[in-house]
Image: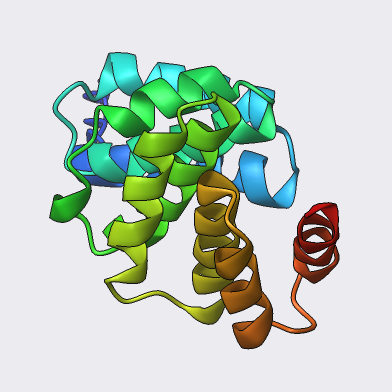
Length: 166
């Protein structure tokens, strides 16, 4: 007598979605392979168009685009987001400001840095925002404010060089 086939249990959709996103994060952060991460995120976008984790996938895509030096694409994607809707909004504003500054859009960058500095930032993001604001303003006083807050900061040497130019 033939046995009935054992039913195969379908994987829970949320579990499948989270596994795929976890793979993209692993490829990006552990393997430092932004291209593989982007390929996995492309698969994610096809399989989970309305996924529960799509916001996290979008942020991972931005990180992967930056890792693969596709900063213009990262800027476009970041500009399309509502940064008030995410707990990391102020931190993402700093990144947006940096990308806008690189693109030569100083006024837009300045607004992002000012908004971010008015919010809640961890010290590392605050430092980036203060230096970005000084760079977008190109004012001596702004570089001096940065140096008062971060005299040995990551951008201290560059800030001092700006002050010496005047």
